[in-house]
Amino acid sequence: MSAVSWRDIDPKDAAGLDLSSSPEIDAPLNEMGERCPWPWGPQRLVDVPMGQYHCPECGAMVLAGVPHLDYREDDGDDGVREGA
Image (cartoon, rainbow, N blue to C red):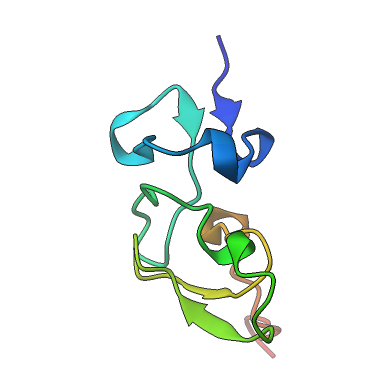
């Protein structure tokens, strides 16, 4: 059985969830590779100016007003090529 994505759960339905102890729900990872316990906070900030925001749950640097960034999606490509 595959994990449910946290993105498929509406923030209003996520009240009371703790993804740090819910392995059946795939959670985004912060810069340290730790699961965010409640990643719906940043996207709920729709009435504030878009900007950098520290997730109060996991400390990741994300953007206010958009879904939580998942650092596992970062391929690490900084544009520098070996041997260049």
